[in-house]
Image 1 (cartoon, rainbow, N blue to C red):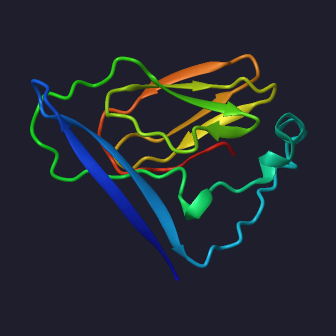
Image 2: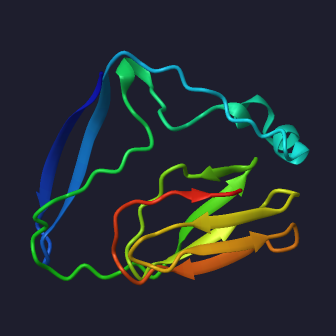
Length: 161
């Protein structure tokens, strides 16, 4: 059986609108599952560009003391206030045939800039539920694509298949 232990502190700042910082540690408890490597042999460029790390499954990444990486934390009961949507795009890169960062939090209506620095064809295949799905081909000469999701929603996976 696996479980998460979440430890957080919230510090309120004296700003005109209610604001704060959240810091904390998320730890994995229980027996650590063995992660199966990912087969990327269908595209030799992926294996060459990324080396052995291309095969590492990042569904569960643990650090010292079983601290977890790639975690989203939902903040409930957010105080009412003016929280403008960032105008700067969030950046998602497919480098070494891996999405970086592995987990990306964006606001509804915030642009998402997707980059393809690899010398191979990628696609960006997202299946959101509240927003229209997308499946955009990114050949070697298409190095950048920008999209915007209009409606807030739960996390969803994006694949390159």
